[in-house]
Length: 212
Image 1 (cartoon, rainbow, N blue to C red):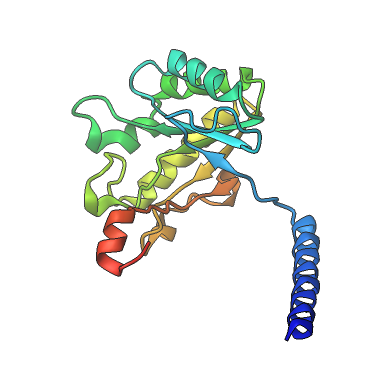
Image 2 (tube, helix red, strand yellow):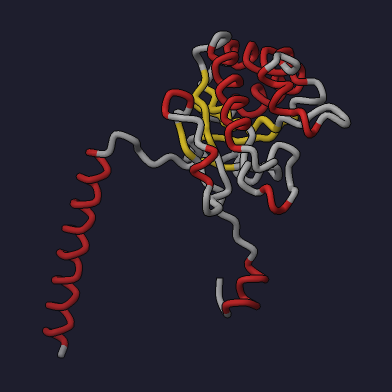
């Protein structure tokens, strides 16, 4: 029995090494290496060195110039790349006009205030704008209006305007992943990265499914 266990362990180790080598080769062949990013309001990951991207939210309806400076400085001092979710909150009582207002230039200051600071950033910036637009049934966001063509025009306007001010940004189209989300896709020319929202609530999952 002792010999058999030794043989099994040796075989298992050899098999594990082979799998590891295969995965390593496949990883090295990948054009897009896997990056680890965090949205870390509690600063739990401040002292770790394996975080590739640090993420933060900002609303563009408050003080976009000052807010973007502070956020870029805060996130950029601890990593080589940052991601900012720009929430295009409309002015009071203008929710229904948000997409039209954007393409007509009503929010040009908000866009330029953010993108000018992105250009000044010492690290590359990923910009995630108008996220989870496909959650229109939940009324979670005023830009989730179930108007795909209008949203696409606004997204393209955002990207074009921002690109005229900076070469230091990549642009994320980030739906929630609801069926039909593809209707809101702005097109390859305007999207560098596609992101999907995946949420977990352990207590609910344990109650509903018995595990998480």
